[in-house]
Image (cartoon, rainbow, N blue to C red):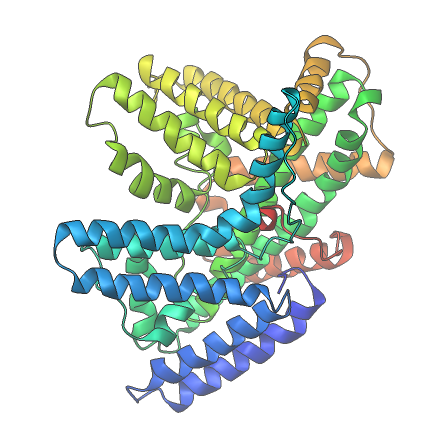
Amino acid sequence: MIFNSFQFIWVFPIIFFSYYCLTYLFKHSALQPRYSNLLLLVVSYALYLQWNPVHTLVLLWVTLVTYLFAILIEKRQAYSKQKYLITFGIVLALLPLFIYKYYDFLLNSITELCGRYGIEIGLAGMNWSLPLGISFFSFQAVGYLFEVYKNREKAERNLVNYMLFVSFFPQISSGPISKSSELLPQIRNRRPLDFEKMTEGFRQLLLGLFLKLMIANHLGLYVDTIYSTYEIHSGTTCLLASICYSFQLYADFAGYSLMAIGVGQIMGFQLPTNFNHPYRAYSVSDFWKRWHITLTRWLTTYVYIPLGGSRCSSIKCYKNILITFLVSGIWHGANWTFIFWGLLHGCILVVERMLKLKEKSKNVIKNAVRVFITFMLVNFLWILFRMPSISDAALFIKKILTSPGRLELVDNTTTIYIAISLLLIVLYEIGMKSLNPFKSSYRIIRWSSYVVCLLAILLLGVLDTSQFIYVNF
């Protein structure tokens, strides 16, 4: 279910009403979590089924594999046996992700390489559609398996609870990626009616809708136009489009995360924060502590640290960083652009560590310059993220650097919307919490901001039920 769709407008109130009726009826009963979880599980699977019923089997496979292997690992105390079980369990759990997302890419790469040497390979590609959220729920389930293996979490015996942990509908398509220690205790325990949490949830949902419909979708109209025909546009136009894409991607993904967190809070759950003003970052290292925080945490916990982290020689530490960001690039997509994008981020982090640029300076001007440089580095790397091939990305960047030319805008209306969208997202990035009208101590200011935000969405938002960008990953 897309949060910015008309289906959400009429389906979610039904889910909300049913859930809270059930919660109220059993508010004094120890059985409340059991019935509430069963309802949420049915809702989560029903919503997933409408995307592609066959893909539900993939979700079930990943869920059951990690559920059973976690129990087996916990029962087998001998370290050697646990090591074989965790390896086999991870392979089986990630097998659908490899088949659906990477098989064709790997096959095409091998075929192209062999073709250069006159070798023909007759293996057929699959060309299957990607199951919704497979990268997210696979990583969440594998993370749980690691936690059990490291004895940081007890294996969940209640199958309904674990199935809900993997498939919880607000976060299944694009995260945030929850740790088992965060979400499973909330699933197991009673969740009383909390109107303060519900109110905060609706605020988060409204702000997320605003970021998506008022900023990301407006910027996307311009970005799609320029990127699809970049050959005929000036370098200045391409530069503006790249900056618009950086903010579009942020508003789109941060908007989804806020909506997921908001819906979770409305249902009584606290999902982890996924963004913390990433374009305020004073280094690329700092950027990855602020952007897609739950993925960075997952990669740090289950890739970087097991490799040795930073508690080793400098050379090995640099290697660990590069491998971690290679995994990040591969996770984002089956294309050489994502692999190259990940490795470049890793290389920049290595350089920052070598030059000791991770720490924030005490000089305000120096920090401002570093924020600008960091943004431009990230902005140019997002071009790789957006383009279909490395050669297209290289030509796009070359045009920016060598053919400035006149700035081209589609029309006056588009110009106004771009200017407003960029202004709003910049204000959102640099804004102080004390100036947030949503959290003002004056009720009239709070409710006025809600009404203005809602009216802006309804009157000026791009209500096209477009997919969120990260759903494709």
